[in-house]
Length: 268
Image 1: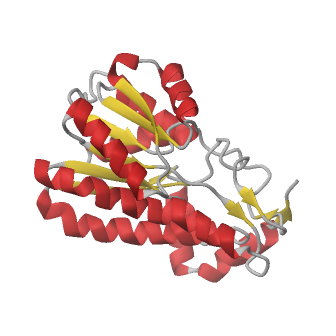
Image 2: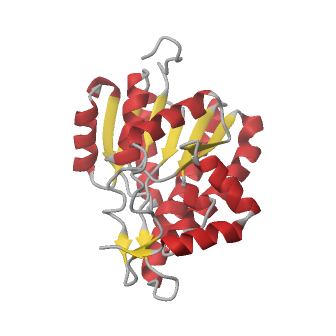
Image 3: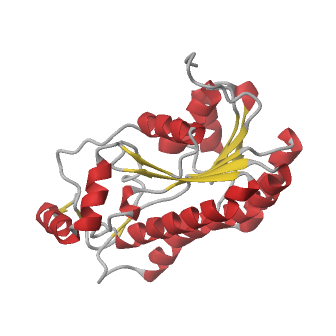
């Protein structure tokens, strides 16, 4: 823990999708700064493996939870309250990608990605809010994407879930501010994780990601999340170089879309 960074001792954080990538990195940095952390994953064994990799097992707990099922979220909430009596930070990170064209998109896959990425976030927020309202404090952190600002060709359904997350989280931020609850939306750009490897792939296997872009690390996203939480930011876009790209799309969408058309390429 750095001397100029406040500690999180006494804070209890719950993170969905915490078995790898951004979720695991956020769990690690919160634990390093003194928080107690509950790692959630659909696969309890993977959550436990992540907990073991991170360490600080005396201040962490690993549980299974499928955010598509409200009963599972409620079960986890009950267990967390039983163990720790409070929830100070809830991070909605569970999600997956879907790579396909609009014309060939499978509707079952489309509904499934919304169930996880968007409706899972909404259900978790609704489940945890009574606890935070009772406490008179709390923070909800939604891990969205720059794709929630700039629609990505061949990732239309994924982008749509992230646009929905952005709108929902920002509306909730206004609604809940007077109750002492901070809602923050985090929009990473390209991140070097196994996210792409776990994405559902349809028939049209194309992407607009430049082959030369390596992306940022999950640890960098986690540091941005912690800074944003401590500063009570409404939104965090990481890396900072994506800020002008988002602004450019807002002002000159045709220019950005022309660039993406030129970058479109087939994937393996």
